[in-house]
Amino acid sequence: MAGATLVVHGVGELATCDPLRGEAPGVIRDAAVCATGEVITYVGPSSGLRSVAVARDAVEIDAGGNAVVPGFVDCHTHLVWLGDRGDEYARRAAGETYESIAASGGGIMSTVRATVAGSVAELVAAARERAARMLRLGTTTVEVKSGYGLALDAEVRQLEAARVLAADPALPSVVATYLPLHAAPPEPRAEFIEAACGEGLRRAAPLARFVDAFCERGAYSVEECELLFVAARAAGLGVKVHAEQLSHSGGARLAARMGAVSADHLEHAGESDLGALAGAGVVGVLLPGASLVLGGPPPPGRRLLEAGAQVAIATDCNPGTCYSESMPLMMSLAVALAGLTPGQALVAATGGGAAALALSDRGAIREGARADLCILDTPHWVDLAYHLGGAQVGRVVLAGAVAAA
Image (cartoon, rainbow, N blue to C red; front, side, top):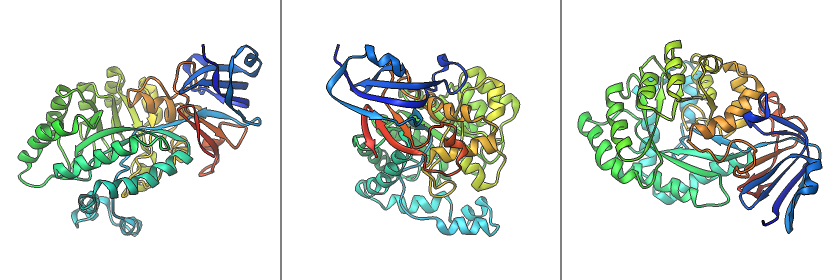
């Protein structure tokens, strides 16, 4: 067998996020990690390195007693957009509501107008900067949605931009999602939805792994979203749902009924909704940054866990309600707002995110997993959440190679 091509040793706390390692986040002290190519081949105490074959040209990293955690999996973002909505941020701070701004031509439609006018190259250039910042902050896998096109060609351009980002080895791994039911549709409404479920899905299917819809008052009804999801499953795409963000819309129950991989937001979900998600094996995705910015109810992190559901954390990186690329910040907010412990937040930001994207090869530091690692600048993994807004990620290993320093 080929020797290890990467050896990370001198790890003070290795937070594996592997449930087989005990209480979250499954810490091994005085630890080491080895990888051959993109795959982790050794996880354990430093003393075990004596039995590991190492390639002559292997990259060796001395963590210097600092902590190592899995790369973050950001499972809900709107990374590809053009335009700026800083003025809306100021208007909301002055007392205007999200709904009133949208009614005056702002909100999602403001971003749609700017994004529709952009070429694939322009979309890629804008999104690449955001993705690069994500990587520096420790994100090694990111979901990227369309949703700012409305018109089919513009939606497809967003997905094509996501494919270009996915081909760049210097950026996080990309999972694309087709989100045609996002902004309120143009008239005639029924024809728009029919096109999204027909020609839209046919063109999106080769570019995306999932389909998503904004099931919400003023956006799309449960019945409209279900039409899309039935067609998406027939096309071989998985289902994700924007559910219960601004009101109790029925989106969580829809996600459970459709066997969705995730239901995201959930601020207005009731106990029976959360129980339905748990029973159906749907991951509940917390977006605490958006909840904080919009001033809504806190995300139901503790309640999801008590219901028996798996929990994920994501940035919801977007130009209107959460312009942030930082998963560590979202961990801090999930602890402060959603009732998670720091260990639960770290698992939600790694293994939970992977589950919300149906990825079984990442999100934990274990043998056989993809070698995505964050080497911190602190000996304590808990500082990721404890140090609010701190720059705790020092180096990032992306698919077995050092990606950022």
